[in-house]
Image 1 (cartoon, rainbow, N blue to C red):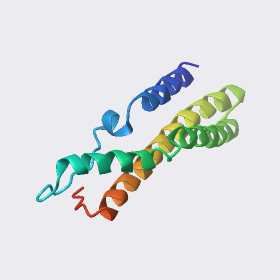
Image 2: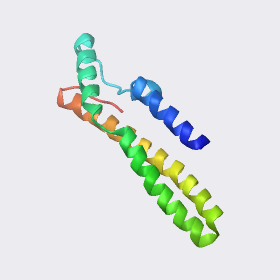
Image 3: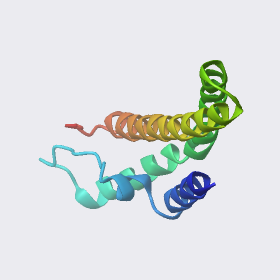
Image 4: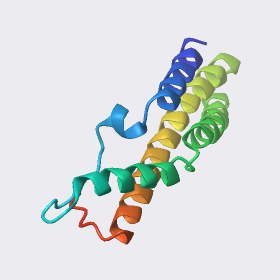
Length: 123
């Protein structure tokens, strides 16, 4: 139950701030000859496109699949208590994996969008 609460708090924080602010994973561009005011507008628009990446949904799917796999392994290796613990560990691991995948996909969307607008993305 504590792990579920931690996961819910994390998802709430992600929804309140931009993922880039939370992770410090902003694109780095070559600023030579770049109008920074226009870049900031373009970056904001690209981040809006990236908001379509469903990080919370990816976390939930990952948690559900992780719980199923963890529960099965726990049941095979032990009893119902081991199955329950395995499901909990699998849910946390699967949820974390889903969040990581969502953040990586969001990062790719932003960088592709900026490249499409003519910026040289360095990272």
